[in-house]
Image (cartoon, rainbow, N blue to C red; front, side):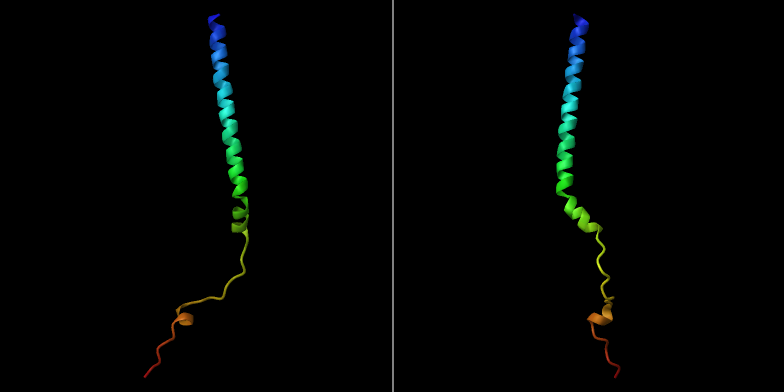
Length: 64
């Protein structure tokens, strides 16, 4: 009878762990699916922009 109680208790602990891990996994999958469009957008390659150094922004001083 004592061993049966231990086996039942260990089984309940194992079932609780499985349920908690399953809930965590489902929650993680839901978050990752929601974040998927942003992650895919970050993988896209944008066309290169024209090089813009300070001479394009500020005029060069004229020599006197």
